[in-house]
Image (cartoon, rainbow over all chains, first blue to last red):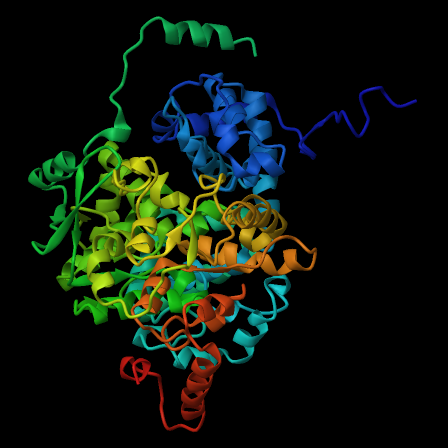
Length: 239
Length: 395
């Protein structure tokens, strides 16, 4: 007979569907959030007024609460904060409506920090949340513009109406019908100079942002590293 | 947990009220850092307009000689947005630079995936500022998220010397100086400041056009002290950009109860979890606007908001929801008021929600306009033209 706690409703041995880890490891991960230099700018205390929840779009559609995020961190509740990192943070819309907080808290900013920690530590929630997102990361890191005209494909945006197909079918022609000279591009938002890309790649290398990709998507990291290194070598720059 | 009470007790042993960082004037600090040799402050040109902001400080909005920090989402998917900004500026006779040495702020990705960090984001921002400074033009930020994020970056740089040191180290590798603009200026602030000049060039009557305004979260919620608030608009209780312009052009701006709600964009949601975006945009914004204000058009001032509110309506129509209203930026709306071509300039064929009833109400024959655009497309196809030019837009 199964133990009474081993039910679908009350899982034992996992956190938010992922394998549980030692308390000390949770403590290490949570301390990375608390030790972030921005942490003290973002959390002052909590009146429990719930204004942040009332303003939060994600709270209306998910089991998500910016108040719980702020309170769990204020209490240094290691288990709950770790669970939120694995379960809640990717539901936040990052709209920062929660900045309406009368106490001056920034729960959206806390979520940003928690997400960075999740990515940096290759947590399962981060890898799962970013599945299907690699093309976007590739675009922004390799081209300097995130949203390109050729991303408007009817199979990717079937819910956006038939105009997406019109744009896709006529893309090159319609881009030539744009008066600003920088906008005739199809695979980037605008024409970005070679020197600008080199400088951008140096930023990704020097700040460790490129290495963060390796924690969540090794294949993408390899491709990006190769593309960037080739371009930098062509420019006579060694990393 | 068991440590909670001791932690709370320790915190209560002593309490110092910190400074109210939200209403502080940051200018003193940025000039202090310049005096200390930490960075260069790019001054707003003398030819500027003073506008009021949330906590009563005046903000300088430069009129011309602007370096257009473009938006990846606008240029990529709503190109009539950027084109209208340029077109209006040209019509008013102000010079500008449309740079190729600009990157996106990369904040859409950062708020979606967190695959970056403070130093990288600040380095991207300051590299763009340095290129604007080198050009001699003053940066004008097209995207609301870029604008909000750059203010956030500025706040972090002002607070954390170790971050400034790290960004300085990275920029030195690029042979770029540290540059911070005196004001971080959003294009919608320029439209607010120039609304009387725009009105002076108005050729289409907007009387009878009913507008609802969606104020963009990253414009006025992130580091809110920079945002324009005008006592004459909503009694100074909401940001005045967009609304002040629409009213100056003679349109009727109607309010609705969910004005404070975001659009539902969500950064990652619009790309990989769009059921949330669609639901929020239609249930909390478009349907509420339709029921309470019945607008002819929804005006907003940010990339993600135009995309979300425009594109989310199609699927909801299949479920017989109360949707179906044109969505555009106030830049496109102002351009139309000034006589811009709806397709050559405003590029409305890239939009999804039906804008044709609005054009008809403005007295624009959209069928004739589309035929004119198709003529130009024919010239491009036949090789008679390589690109449509600014001269062609007014032909």
